[in-house]
Length: 251
Image 1: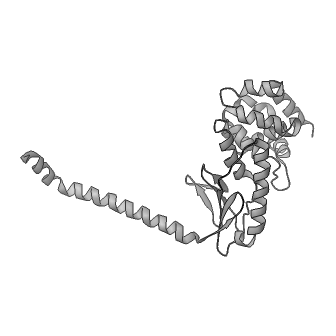
Image 2 (image 1 turned 60 degrees about the vertical axis):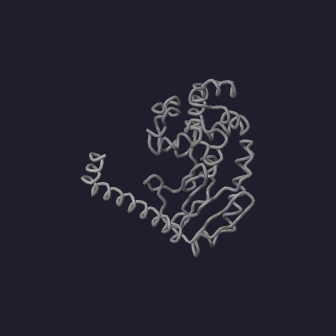
Image 3 (image 1 turned 30 degrees about the horizontal axis):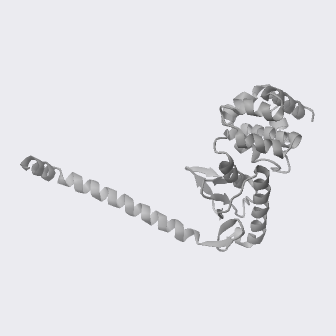
């Protein structure tokens, strides 16, 4: 007992300092949480499928009726395409200031619980992109990200240019981007990888229909995607790749 008491006495200052450090960190965390809640000053609009959070006196507040209608339209389009039902209302946040996810500046992001996008005077994100991520994660969390990200670009344009045209302009040599490598890790090609993913998945939907793509997405994993694709489309991934790149080279 004497040895234990002596040890505690000897290192008492160290233990007290460590305890105080933990207490300070906890207090800072609580204070930051309060700051997040107070600085945003959220207002909420409830719709059939969403709890839409927007900031007072923000661009989103001005356009909230339009945004609510668009979200419900996007929800209907995506859930019908993938044959999924979501009964719980989705929290959807419109931020009026720059947004960060994992310390990286982003236009928007979706978690398993909610969706966050920027809607400001400089950037108004009202596209279905992040909502599709959210719903697709429910449909099949095992789907390779190439298909998850790729189908989020369906029907979307940037600067009045679709993603097929972006690929045609940015990728004069399509042989540098084999489908096997794209599915494995399309992010290694940077922003061009995103354009390729958008183009290929949009090509599948445009040429073979939403029903087949929905079936593919519900079943596909990183291990079975080649076999599953061939079963559904009656063409091998290589044959589909040739058709896609031939389509891109015609215009």
